[in-house]
Image 1: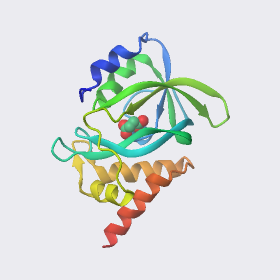
Image 2: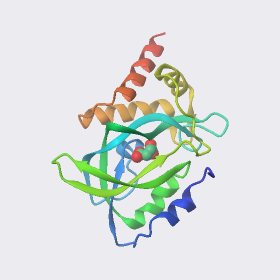
Image 3: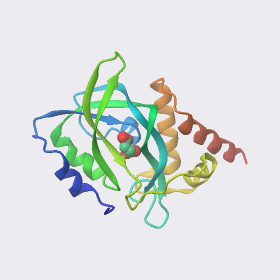
Length: 189
Ligand code: SIN
């Protein structure tokens, strides 16, 4: 699959510009909100785990030294917490541009904190995209993240801001928090 997924995403869902759509964010979309939205709510999706297995050539790394950013991996009983935004469909042009380094829009069912549900869209990067980096130990991932940076800032800030945002939402993520601990331990030498 080509690394630039913008065109594919634009073709994927035929949305009217005035339609309102729920977007589920689980990575930088939780804390870096540079798009307009009508409402946001804490939410989770079932059957997916957040993992730092996707490469970033355009935001937190470069073509030659990609950073590591999150994607979702299918796992039957897993629950991934995040933040849902109600957006006007026209906003997906901006979001598709931001997420074009391997992410595809996928339809998903999300559950809000009050137990109600909605169907919406989320961006997932799958192993067949060219920017995919795949599994590594959390310590190796921490080492990688400490070294990487790109046009949107350091890879370390991406991780730290995500961990902080998850704590503020009261959400647990053993993978994210373990990588954060390794980074802090590596800092201490
Ligand atoms: C997301 O935040 O939902 C997608 C991954 C990212 O942009 O970090």
